[in-house]
Length: 323
Image: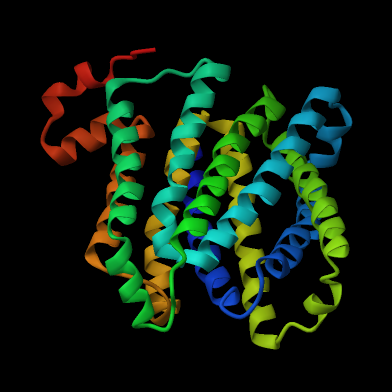
């Protein structure tokens, strides 16, 4: 239960981060967003690591935890986050959500193969529901584009879906690396690991910004855009803090699906902050809600879902491990 609550807190802050990020990339660039949001987490997690024993924990690490946590940082905070930000800029937050939900399927597959976690029939139903979402969005391309144009926003489907898939890969693969890095460690290891991941990602982003010659453009950001990016940085740092601790106390197959319930918070916060910059037709919202049901099925909370659907008599059959 504690792991589930931590995952839900992570989801809420991630949804709020997405809504504030969306406001920022209306005027700012994705690399500018990366240059602010990634380094922002380092001083915050230095303090948390000092308070929660993170430095003592990583001092006892061997080579493997360092390798996995650095890899997790590069894959999640560089590859996944850039894909997320780019897809959000090209498609908007709501249209990019279903394709990004595919990260759940990848995370589950990797957990089964490498961590020995199990899959039941209800999990397969969840995968099917998660996959349906992107299909609905793709088929509604013309009407969604028209809705976006009416609000002064033109969704770019081709590159947007590609970057959404990049995001799904980064966010889907990183939980495995975090779980392998923490192994049998506790919360102190997870906080120390989060700091290591953020530092690794920050080094890459700083070198990227310098190589791209973007240093001056970041300094020249207007006050409003910089403010949205800073808020996004705070919320995503809090989201990652709760995520890493959740992965230390609960299985990947529980943490990842619950955390992806951030799509509900995306809808809520984007409706509040970005109503004039997003597509909210019933098909898009419906595809997102389908993916939420799929996430519940993937989380292994079979009794709760079956009770909602009035199918509790099938609980034993659907919850039986398949592999």
